Image (spheres, helix red, strand yellow):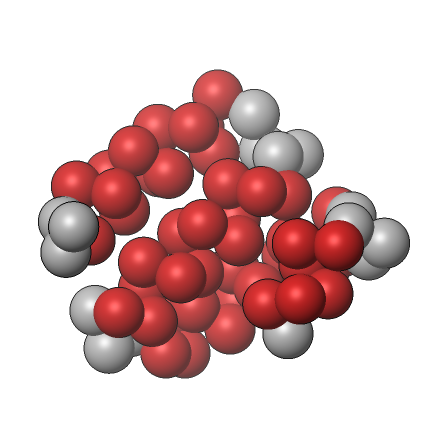
Amino acid sequence: MGRFEEALADYDREIGLDLGHAAAYLGRCCAKCELGRHEEAVEDYDRAVQLDPDSAAVVAAG
C-alpha cells in the first residue's frame, strides 16, 4: 500500500513493547529499505537474525 512511514511507526511501537520480537525487526527492516534507510535496515535485519536465526522468514529475507 506504500504507507511505509506508518508501518515503521507501528513496528517501532511493537518493538518498544517486546524487544525480543524478531518478526517486528524484520518488518521494520523492510519498511526502512523501502524508505531508502539501508544502513538502519541492515541493523534491524541483524537483530532479527540474532533473536531467531532459524526463522524461515528471517532466512528468506536474507
